[in-house]
Image (cartoon, rainbow, N blue to C red; front, side):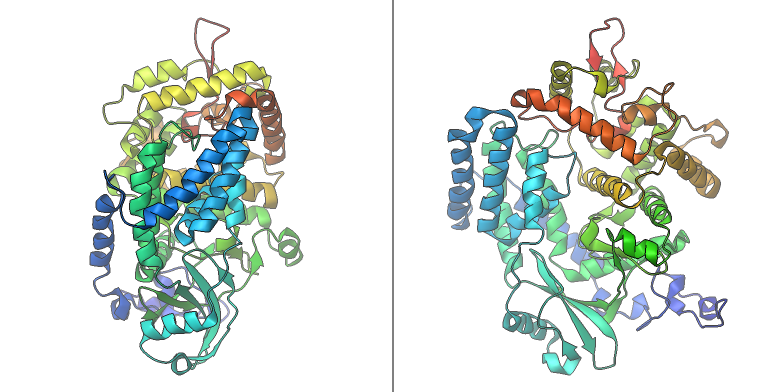
Length: 571
């Protein structure tokens, strides 16, 4: 229920919108959010359950090809792989990966929206997928042609059940943005509110379901044949993709995600974020009308600084708010990138596009909480147990054997001091060991890591001279002070036993704890450049290797040297 006290005037004497008690919305409300009165929310839990219930059938491997769509898919993907095998694969290394990546990107573009969406998700996976694959699929982000306005009008009128002119006094024919699933138009309601209208491409729902069945049939044939990712084989990648894209096809679920994330931030009193209000009535499976917001593009550093925005504070809010949502409420925006957020003139960050939202059940939320607690205390086994409980390792995995084989309990190794041969061998050895233990990337962990990668790049843009170790210490102190009792209770820790130990954190950056006390992002970039340079001479033997950041970064991938043999190094 909405707290009536929220109607009280603020410090400037202006009346605050009542719905700020339940969500981090704008102070200038075009309408008030009252969830119980929003017509499109009726049966929303059943809608979400129904979408999830379809997944097993969509990703079930079939003995026979599923329909005519498979012919074109096999022709495009098979042609891409065959061309690579005949040409670039023989050259090996970076040339091989670049050739395959380019061919797969061209195949995705030829196959249409579903495959372009898959490419867009891969494009945000720096550190999860080979650099060449990520680079190629980044070209899918802004190369999706929009639907004709006549088609857009037809979808909107069919969904809203009335002519466009009866709902909107103006509707821009040219979209603000066009993506694989939908496109977004600026419009104004007859009641005067400026809005954004998200319109789904026609027939995309049927096409996505058909394509997922084709992918599930095709994926097993690609196992071990192409270097897709270190910790996600093709069938696992299809499962992850299916989990993310199916909920995007019903905009009622996206609108509910907006309310749930807004409510989470409000409950945490995290007011550094703003989420647009979905319209009380104008939301359907294929049309979503929401409040229009404006601000600085996330990479417009000069514009923000000229307006007096503290860009370091923007980063700090981003990290804290993201972690708070994951740790305490088990919900977070699952697709952070520059196109899905911007900064308001007052320094708050506006979040957009909630089609992909991470939701952790209570068991996984507690596991995630223990993972971060273990990292802050440098407790390796707590981190490994948490990764197992998150689904990154099988339930019966011998965690001590994993620690021993990867050499995680030994002294720190600085990857910049390894020779190319040593660095190459260790990446291959680690990847092989993890796959041997059945390591995989659950959806929520993949989304979390993908968001961390974005925040990493955001620091490079907005606050390159931020001391990372000092910031981590400050954030840890914030959580201990503000949420310490709840975190300790949920994670099963004695609050008095918690003590920040940055040894493991420093090791995860590949630095020796006793020798490095500060590290800016500019310093980190220089280290990564050196590591990349060391890898380049040996690129031919790294076809299936990942960059030196992995799903196990919380367990310090570059941290240890195996005991007893000074020549044996483990990342």
